[in-house]
Image (cartoon, rainbow, N blue to C red):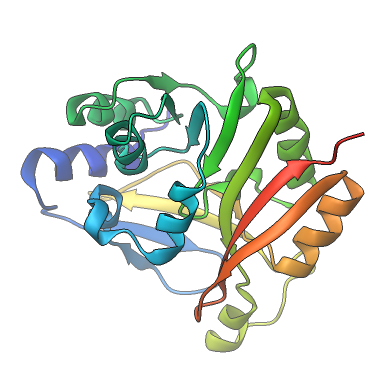
Length: 234
C-alpha cells in the first residue's frame, strides 16, 4: 500500500507549525517544485478574492470537495452553513477533525451517493480530480446525482498554456491541461496522479454538450478563473 505522503506533510505541519523537510511536487511539464503547505492552512484574512467570491455564493447544504485540512469548511461553519468536508486522504481527515471541522467524510467523490447538496464546492483547482476531459464529463454527470433541484457547482480552474512557453516544452499529444503529478516527502514518493486544468473555451464547449449552464464569475491576471454551473432545466 502506497503511503499518503501528502497527508503526512499536512499532519506534520499541523503538529509543528512548519516542515523540517519540504513537500515536493514532481510534474510532467517541468522542474520539481516545493509545495507551500501553509496555503492549505490559511485563515479567512488570507483567502484571495476569487475564493471569497466563491464562498459568498455558497447556498444551502454545501459539499466541500477535496477539503484538504478544512480551511474553507471552517469558514463556512463559522457562517452557520451546513457543510460536509469531503477528502480522500485519511490523514487529512484526521487533521480536519483536530482543527474543528464538524462533518468530515473520508471518501472518493465518485463513490459518494445517496446524499443531496445545494452547492458542490471545488476550490484550489479541486476540479482537477477529473484527471482529463473525459473525466470532466464523468464529474459533471456524477454531480447531477448529488445536486438538489436548485443545486449549483462552483469551482476555479486555470488556463495553463503559458507553462509550455515558460518551460519551453512542446505541447503534448493529449489535451494540454492534463498534467501528471507525484508528491515526494522525506524521500518517499507518493502514488502518481493525473490532474486537470481546463481552459474557458473547452469548459464552455463541454458544459454545453453535457447540458449545463455556465457563468464565468471572475478572471484574474494569472489565467485563473471562477465558474458557477448548474444543470440546464427541462
